[in-house]
Image (cartoon, rainbow, N blue to C red; front, top):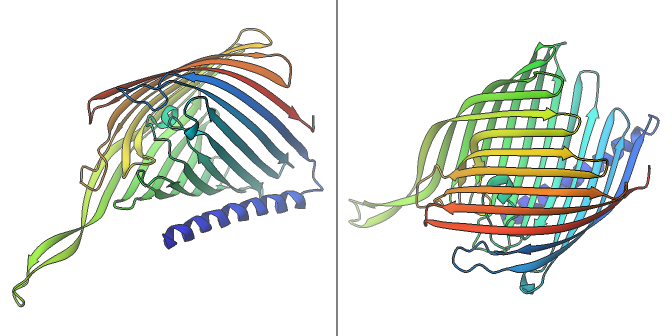
Length: 410
């Protein structure tokens, strides 16, 4: 427990240091041309959910009201770009009021152009959330209603070697802590290195190397990956990218075995470390189109990823797409869709068995009354099949959202 508190304190100190450096650097650039933005917003959302616990046999419906005040500050001096955002989510359930919570979200970022060749930066965030469906659209996995505290931060460095060549280094850290012991805390580290080369005026090739480490209470996962690919602008409105490669993953956990001691004549329990390894394919493919009235994007990826609240990582295949349409000056349409298949690599007793697929489709329509006020009407359909217990869960949500926002520097 003491180690966990110390680790959380280190993450918090790192976030405070980043935010302090952010404002010091921005203040030091006071002599430059400054572009400031201070935006306040208030979102009021009412929704009907026909299965708030994502239960197959006992679906419980409820009305949920969420009030979300937010403040965001941004400053750009040319050399320094900085931002900070804070949001509160006041969640009220009409019938299941024991689920009422005050969610919190804070994040800050900094980008500093040190020289013509060198750019450095980083970001930090703290989230405190409670909804069961908080991750389903991004990972395909549903959590329970336990409050989760997530702390994360990253730093990066990009250096231009020549007119066509650039190298980059990055380091990221993250930690999830749950109030309920039913869910598993974990932390992760990522170290990355990239080399980019301009192949044509519209195409950039890139080589990426990553080392990831995921620390769970009973399992440790080390992952090494390398990908090769390119991003390109095919036309003025159509772009694409593809990255392909492989990974080597090692899972390890502590166990024991019984051995006979010939000198004492007793059977003793000897601690051992059990390891297993796996090599696999990783890849990412994406396209985007940006027209005058219609835009869309699609992303397909396959890689090892953390599974928040579980006891191990998951081998995740995901397909996500988004289509936007502007009908008039004030009326917009938007459809998001995602499909995920999660399967665990580690089949030991120390890890959770994961074999799930999920489908999420969310159409919505937005009307902007003026620059400050808009209204959204959305529907979200979720279908999840868990092959480990042969269950299928369906959920339907209808949302009405009113958003007010104002920038005091405009």
